[in-house]
Image (cartoon, rainbow, N blue to C red; front, side, top):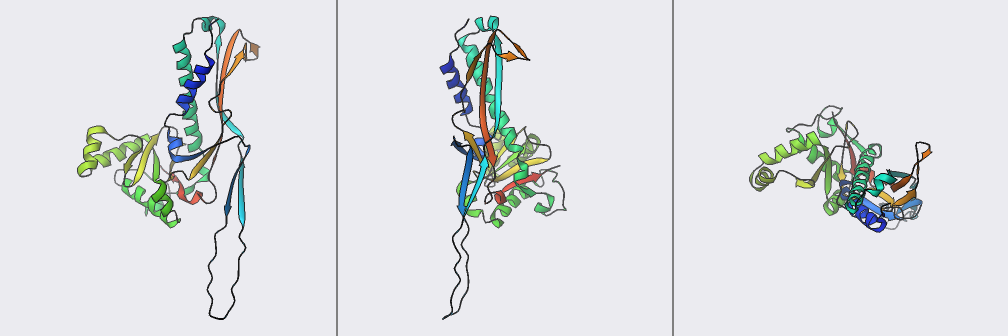
Amino acid sequence: MAVIPTIEYETKLQERLDSPVIYKEVCLVKMTNSGIWRNPYLTDSTVGTGTRGTGYTSVAVATVDETVTINTYTYSAQHIDDADLAQKTFSDFMEIAGNMGTVLNEDMEAKMLAEHAQWTNFDNASIGGTAGNITVAVSNVKKIISSIKREIREAKGGKLLATNGGFIIWREADFELVELLASSEGFSTADDALNNGIKQGFKYLGIEHYSSTHHTAGHVFAGVKKAFAVGIVQSTFGKVKTIINPVVSSAQISGIGLETRVDHKFMAWNKMAPVLFDVLVA
């Protein structure tokens, strides 16, 4: 039987999990071993008006303790028959580990984009049209971008936008339109887009632009970077369990099982939801 390079396997898996991915670019990632994730915050101060010689009314400082339970996980589990195991090389195990890390990252991206119910709706009325889903076109890409920035400022998120930056995760067809538009602009923007195309995180009109194939149909994600949070259990992240003679389809097999998981919870905290947008698209 081949020796399973467990330490090297975990190292390769962790390298792939730690590689730059969209959900880590746009989300605030919190590594924790607490089952209950807390986000306490103070209520806003109030302002009053008085006249000379009259009293004022004081308001008590209050703390709101938002909490959420980290109770979901995404996993990858595979098994290898003993005869196949005997023929596996070190590079085979590294390829398996890398692949598991890749599919976990892709699933985390899909899980993030499936959380659109937590965000603020942004539809055709938000860009000055009639209510309904937006048909994305070269002619309205700039309006979509500028309107998202306006909505962020109206939600009092202008300072956060200036500090963290903004983002839009387009569908691939929409991203193509952004590329076409950018390549038609004057001077350096067009030159760079024409020579190199546009890459993930391309900055245009003050917003970073990404694309994904993992959107829920009819939804695009946009907002302020690091406003959407994800809690990840640190102790299980990037760890691999090796199971001898695992049970597969209700029967025990002669071989090994490899299993890894990412325990997580995506959360739009109350004060951040107004600067996160579910862009409704046709």
